[in-house]
Structures are given as C-alpha cells and as structure tokens.
Image 1: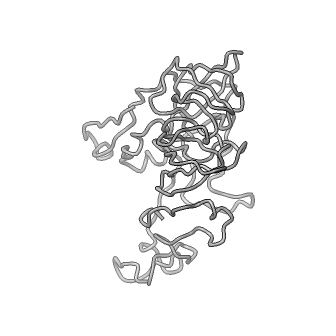
Image 2: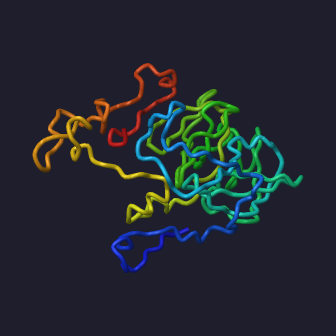
Image 3: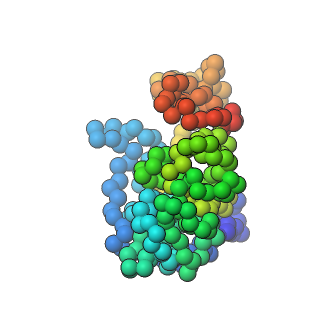
Length: 280
C-alpha cells in the first residue's frame, strides 16, 4: 500500500492525497460474512445527539471480523486481502481446511497463499499466527490482543499499530503499548504475531470537506467562533482567544491535556508505567 499524490488541478486536490489500494486483491466482500449497518447519526435511543459531527456518508455493510479465532490448531489459507470501509486496517479472507471462511485483521506484509493458524499452545512465530502471549518471546510485535482470556482481541487493531512483548513474570507478561504505556496481561490472553496492516494510512491528507462528508463526518465549528450561549470559549468582539484559565468542552468540563482516566479504576493495578504526558 502507498499514498498517491495528484497534481493540484483544483483547490481540493492541492496538498491532498489518497490511498493507492495496491495491496487489495479482491474488490467485493464475501456477502455471507457481512451484515447491514443502521445509521444513527450520533444519536442515542432517545434521539439525542451524544456524539457530535456525525451523519451522512457512503452506505456501508459491516464485515464480520473474527477477533477471537477460536478454531484452534486448524490451518487456514489466506485467499484475499480486502478493503474494509469500517476500519483503517486491511482485512484478510481466510479459508480453513474444512472449507469454512472468515475475516481477520490482516497483519502488515501478509500475502495471498500464506498459511495461518490459531492455537492455545505454542506454534511457530510466524506472521498471522495466534497464540497465548505467554508463549511469545520478548521483542516480538503482536496485535489484536485480548484484555481478558477468551474475551476476543480488543487492543491494537488500527492501522500500523503493534505491541512489543517485553518480559514474562509468573502469570503475567509485560508489554509496551502503542501509546508507550507499559502494562501487564495474563499469559493466557491470545495475541496475533505481526503489526497491523496499512501503516501508511497516517500519511493521507483528506484535502477538502467533501471527502470528510463521504466518510460520515459533519463540519466542526471552533468554540471560540461561537457565542457565549453556545460554548464556554465563545463571545468577544472579532477574533478572540479562549480567554479562560483552561480549555473546556461544550459542557464546561476541562479539555486538551487533562487526564480523563478514573483515579480508582480496577485495571490501574495492571499499569506499570503510564503513557507519555504528551499523549495523555
């Protein structure tokens, strides 16, 4: 995969870039592995907007991804690398020896024809293989890691992400998260060897508002451009700075650089070193 830059034939093309999709080998999804998505426009079950700036966008079908991969010790072959409109990573269509097919998050540099396997014991340290993190040596990159055994992968699933296995201490394995946080996981939590595909995604520049509307994002207005009734940053004559002690959300809560993690969260015991202050 790469990022393609066009000549600036229009203002929207200037400094914008697109995905070249060179790694995609199949243009249409496996229909029985998809399901419809009902659009909510950022609204909850009461019809109130709880997430701002959502609405519209191209129609999509959800790809049912197998985050657990519980078909243990059954070898599967990669049939295709596909585009998924619901995530920035690529997905791989795999076919098991008995003919059953499923989608998985594709690791970087996985190719059609490669063999992958999932096991509860130790298997070969090979791209796309899944096993308990306690069986993976230090220095290996993994992704799609479980927070609790059997829960299914929830950590490190977006494009280019990866977790570095560092050391094993009794029933826990110490890993370095994408945020640089050092954290411990149970040795029985499953993880997939490799780094998530499509790492160049971060280099895409969307260029114009219309491309964001295609993605389902509505316009964002700065708080300082509003009136005082609409936002804590609003008001004043002409262009004004925030003017308060610290930035706030539209609801008046502290924002930008403020810790949002609960002080007495149960999982705090599993964090060895917090992430960098710049990334909080």
